[in-house]
Image (cartoon, rainbow, N blue to C red; front, side, top):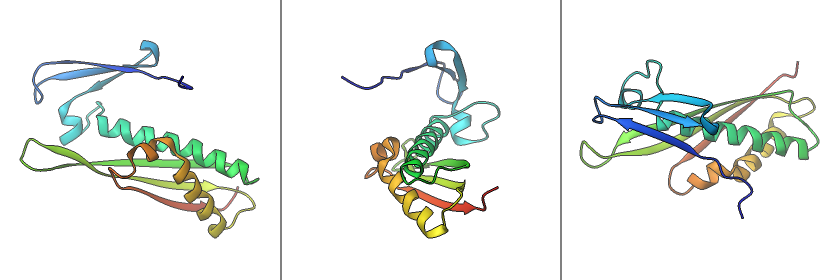
Length: 150
């Protein structure tokens, strides 16, 4: 039996270019508009599967890094993880693929130098369930930077 199961539903109306959808998550409490323009042009207040994938990977990695730093005995004061996901054409003009995910990490961790932080950040990358689900199919790059503790 799974530890947890989370679900989301997207309802779509219309064509790809002229249609629109609504993503409903968290038991109906969170509703996000989705459309093709958010994927291929400007988001203009809507979201896309790629943005959601970037957010999922960034959130998962932030938790994995927080856990790894705590296990290391050097909990972070603050972590900021910015995720980005790239969509590109593959094959003909109507085929697309995710070509990469990148996580840019900035952290404030008292008592940890840059080399030790990089080691813990790499360990967290290997332990992140979302990154691991994608690894081998999509390149996942993590760039980490340690900030001076406040």
